[in-house]
Length: 397
Image 1 (cartoon, one colour):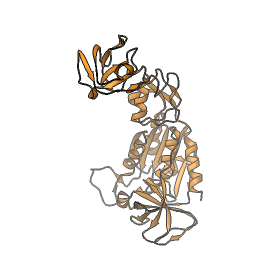
Image 2 (image 1 turned 180 degrees about the vertical axis):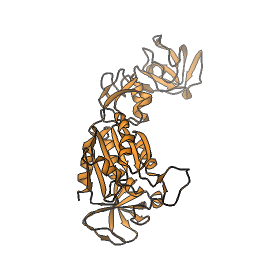
Image 3 (image 1 turned 135 degrees about the vertical axis):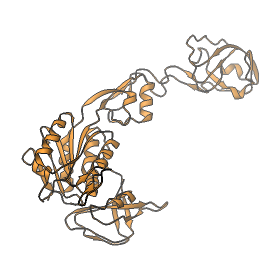
Image 4 (image 1 turned 60 degrees about the vertical axis):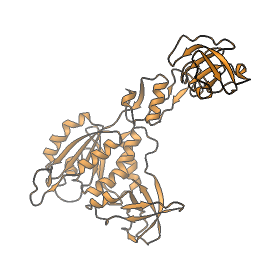
């Protein structure tokens, strides 16, 4: 058997880096910046008022309260700014350009709000309530560094410094295929021996949540010729093919039968659940084959696909948050395999470690218990049992 870490490294290596494209800001949310981008303008681009109030010379109101004539009105957006003459004030709004000659702004709350003349009630020091040009970002400097995940703040900054589009790693296009003659798509009635198909729904949802695109082909029957005829034409638009089912050691393993000798290697990974795995290339397209049981699918996604897809799209942090926690009950694990058990983690305020309890048994068919879990409890290959109160590693979902 191959180790979990070795298989993860192989899967990650299949994908390499996603292509770099330029996208409008409105289409780039959640993607990763592929190159440094520089500010086209300073931020702020000019000295401006941080308050609604009056632009003044601080020395003119040193003996406040004083009354000054209001010589100008400066709303935000005004571009023809007149110099402030000594002994006068300009009424100014937040964000409006500071007039030459002014060195401070008195907030309107510290005045009588006059329009023709204004009575100023308090003194200020030079620089009060002024936003200086470039105090946030200087024109020509790096505004956002390569590797930045573009969230609301990052996209807002990009727009503020004059960018209309950004270079990002393109979202990967993943072809998701579920196999099995026993699978039926709801709401078609089930016959005895059939089950409803769910793996493609889970996988596509998990893949799209990472910012990838997912095309789904559901319920391909266990026939090699049909599998190839259905899937091969769709590979031309795919960056990755992900299959579920048909990779174990029994008969009618359609994925294994169709792709063995075609550039895909099938292997046993030292883990529970999810031992039967495969990966490689088919017609030049990276392929990752997963087992068919639903819990095995989700655990395999967490262990292999999620970090590989994130890394390919430029993310630096590809791992789930890992913590230590005390077990609420004893557990066993097969020797020589890394076990991933669904669990529920609770952190107590003031405690160094939280507590975690398993949800459901180790069976790879027990999907309902996954809906009650918020973590995976990880028992390493050299551990076959743990007791209540022992500390274990937990991956927070």
